Image (tube, rainbow, N blue to C red; front, top):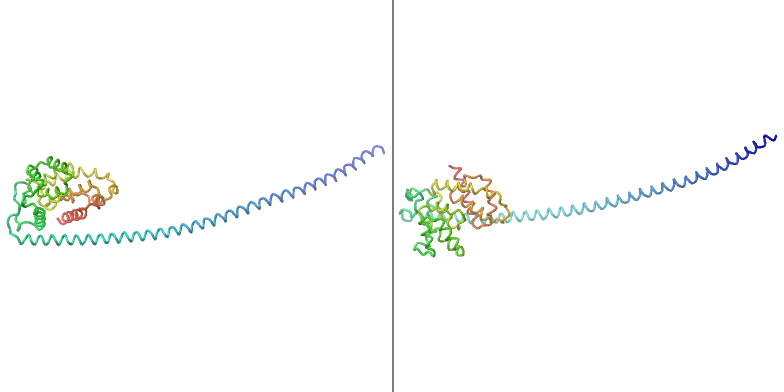
Length: 320
């Protein structure tokens, strides 16, 4: 009996310990449920916050898209108005240019008719090659007759020899291109007078085209080439060949020019195109490359007349 008492006591204590453990486990289970419930609420609140943030950002993007579409629509409307204004200005400019062209053609036709009615005396133009004489009016082509008519109009104010700079005549008679260039440089303040007198002075040169060609180390006033343009059909082939060689050497230097740099007032591009027009060699150069130079001289006073003359040279070359 004494041996069984410790076993009974041990069994009783075991039962008690199991009950205590059960209570502790139950208490632990209750704490775990509370912890899991708190974690889920935190996660749920977090996801709801993300949803609200995404909706707010979405609405902001919708508003920005509407604002962009509004600005884009207004910009298109402004561009359309500007394009319409540019087209209207271009049309007005073309109409004015056409009026001037019609007036110029009308004046040339009238001058030609008057020229045909006057005496059939031998024209006063000096031969360019120094050997052959100028053709008579009956033998001349219409273009040459028009050129002589224009030449007569240029020289008329100085028929009595009333030149402010008679030195110009002497320099041209001597074919002194260096002296002519220096004289013009020294008298730049009176450039307007020089532009009027140089065409008359060039008439006294044995070979005006050669004289101007030799002076192309710098740019001469418009009047000197204006005289040669009017009689470009009479320029000899040798002189044209020399002019072409100068132009071919000059052309690569123009390729680096910026189209917008001079705002349509490039002196170098104008001088190059004037050289081609003066000696009638525009047809020897690429039309697309020459077209790139036209905007560079668009604001110069002689641009329209120069473009028309270059175009007529190319048209004549195609016909031939």
